[in-house]
Image (cartoon, rainbow, N blue to C red):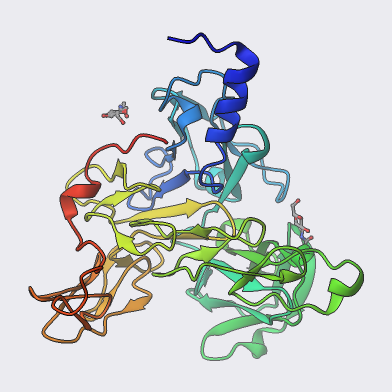
Length: 382
Ligand SMILES: *[C@@H]1O[C@H](CO)[C@@H](O)[C@H](O)[C@H]1NC(C)=O
Ligand SMILES: *[C@@H]1O[C@H](CO)[C@@H](O)[C@H](O)[C@H]1NC(C)=O
């Protein structure tokens, strides 16, 4: 065997780590646990450099309350970080509901790929609750953040961005029990954590949102460019691969960030029920599977429920005919295909394709049919 000196070995590991530019990092919040003392956050990495492979040099995974964006009161007692191997960390030790308010972040990956994944907690007992927590929009779009009223108060609603005052709405301005913040012509610098709170109410009662704006900062003639969902790179000049199943095209490297429960360069394949991670290598434990879990992935994806689940606490199964993360996808099965809420159309023999629209007969180069077992095992890094 040839002995590779450290510089060459480093170079190889560096190259290997660039296969698949999006970092395989998932921050999970278990929303079934409403008692702060039982609540915990877990961050899981599928990266070779964090204990999956032989690379011992990668910096450790971090999971912490992140007060850089939104300042909150310090927790009642210091939070406890527990490591399980080098690819999984858990944060516990919350003692009161306000310990959960604010932003949490997990940092993983090595070198230039070091990535921060954010989670914002919404208390089930809040006055206001976001209709949707993560808003991923494109530069130049209009973003509409919508907070619906759970407990009415006859006072103004204060919107904040990154913890600083942003806008006030009079309580008469509620429409259909909702307070809307419209942000026209958003720019990447408009990205951040937004919140809506009744005047003089505790931050515990707030609705917290994340706004993620895809696209590059304006510079020179790129100023006018609207970066459509299907484009990436400087000036949004390059075309995305066409991410499926709710995958989001990364604006800086053109790769698809796949929703939990989907894999492949275009997120074309569903994992087995209860599986997640870039190669479906992780599994939701326990009898309820991924029910009640919020999954946060690297931007521009943000957070969602796992595949097959929806609702603010991710506890509701998809309605018939719907599937995927947050049940955002609709089955349109043809030729007798049936809708599975985790994977979409399940085709009868003789048919394949997303809608079972392709006949097995005429197409010898047909894509492999979904072999559930195929994704079961741990898939090693290239
Ligand atoms: C640690 O991780 C392993 C493998 O992922 C898992 O089987 C085990 O239950 C975990 N232990 C704890 C205490 O979470
Ligand atoms: C919020 O903070 C982030 C990260 O510090 C920054 O990039 C962004 O521009 C800020 N957004 C606003 C609206 O202040």
